[in-house]
Image 1 (tube, rainbow, N blue to C red):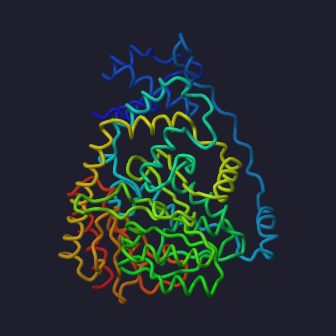
Image 2 (image 1 turned 90 degrees about the horizontal axis):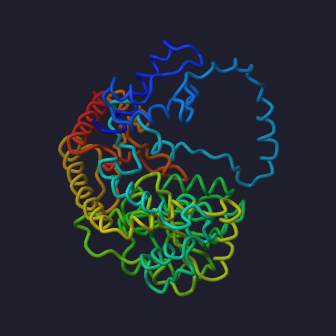
Image 3 (image 1 turned 30 degrees about the vertical axis):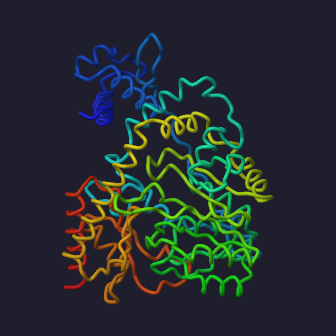
Length: 479
């Protein structure tokens, strides 16, 4: 049995037996629990740790575990209604209210109910995560000299050097800051570059988490449409001219949600247009390590072809490893780097050193290359399986004109006769969770959409079952 399941089951068993012991009474010894439940000593220790964290038992080194005294009766709930006035009193003066709608982000973070197929996830299924390599890297990191000491505010030099090499071009370690994942880096970048009340140009559609960050900073997202080759330069130039914006946020590689890749002449056009407008390009390079096996050579990051400091580059290790390995990087050159550094230091001081050390151990191990190859093969297989299942069973949900060769999802347009909100509800009733398209648009969407992730499911059988359930949901609404 998987260790994690054993711990949970033993904790449940002990929790149900606690009534047999008086408050302050001693539980059986660890050795007795090992024999009684036929589990390992590690499982017993972890299960007791869970109960201790819940306040149900107290562990005393050398003495054992004891049933905790009952908690004091909870005090009556206070009256927090005054906060409605306090939080809204000054919003009238805000050009862009900073109340944040995080629903588009939470839908990819929340675990679905038991038995529901997870087509709305934003991270790799545990079966695709390098759990053994991560555990080994964390163990080795903990033994490094000074692993629990205070790291440099900019990040460990070796890790900054690794990210600089990954970005390529003339980017150096001195131009890289280590961040607590990509979302944190985006937050720092938009706070550094935008002034509350001013516009920020964004791709349309785009990542809801970025829209939430922009609005939380008091910025006004202005959409610039994307086609199969990325953002349209003519519309980008027109948007800069019409709004006077000084920031454009984009995902040039396997854009979320469309999967588009900014190619060829458009790459240079975007940089030229931004430079002429005196504006920065925030490049969110989130999917470079989620390339599929059949992708072929990838275009370099925009930052690699940017000697003038137009690009502020964001990347992360999180998507291709684990949601909890929140290690990323910001890269920039020129005076803006100092502003980025100052905001990051004020917000978070630094990324915990053990996490940085573990990231270094992970990317330096032979298992790293094997993991990337395994993910590339598995994502391609899952993409093909999902696309084929949709084409065969749900032809009314329009696949993108160009199936992406990177990323972890497909972006589907709904027919005009199918309501997006109604489909989401019907899908949940059928036992499958999908991501709605509406949060990906900063203005009115041109049509209904859904985003289906193929990375969060357990495997091909669950992919097929998810499509079958989605077919049931569509039939419920159309028959």
